[in-house]
Image (cartoon, rainbow, N blue to C red; front, side, top):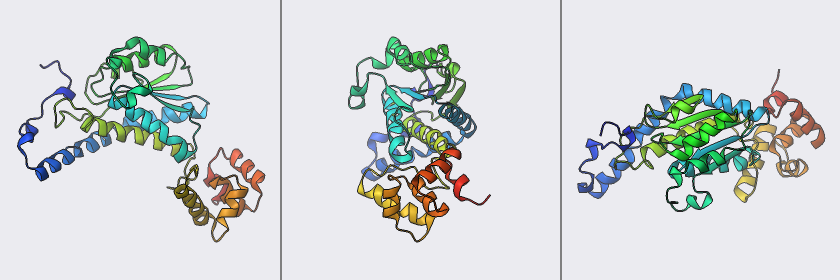
Length: 293
């Protein structure tokens, strides 16, 4: 049994979990995730290196493909799909790819994670300026390993996210992030501790990259795409916070809905075209346009 990855081990602390009362069961399952946070934080250096690779790829016009199977694949798609509305990112720039295709988002697709040929094909379009991120709790999913291998052959940079030390996936990566979460409360159920750590790692990489790319101003999401009432109200609030006592609604209308453009119009006394030009010259970094030198 020593050949099993740590994610498949049995946790003696939860050996009697089915005998707990309801409150103790809830507390035990919730507390099990504390270790996932620590495991992710312990990988801060590797996460920072991975973030740099993602930023470099996007800045030079490349794309980021995130590969996973099962829970890992669903997390990959989730993280990628949230970037366009939150940060105004082109949906083609970061893509989550799950073994078995979109149908696997809702229900398991038999043997999809074992399909190495499909993994390789999924990475066929990557080129030298791109980044491939492979996620697998044990690091053994053939689909993910094949995707990273093909990405390397295509000249793309590679990042591995795993939860078991010594995983075969890490050997295929320029940067390996191993958030060692150990045994699960329910043996082998990596949707729990491992999945939580993976989500933290993906959130940290993608959010860190968006910050470095100027998609925020301080801790404000100034590239938010206002697609509903809540986000429209947030956009108006952001304009007022950053530009003072202004008609935020009118500014946003003139700026085509762009918070950044509206703020620059108010702060620099220019029209929308002038604001957009200033932002282009600053490579989208609002701070470079409105903050004192």
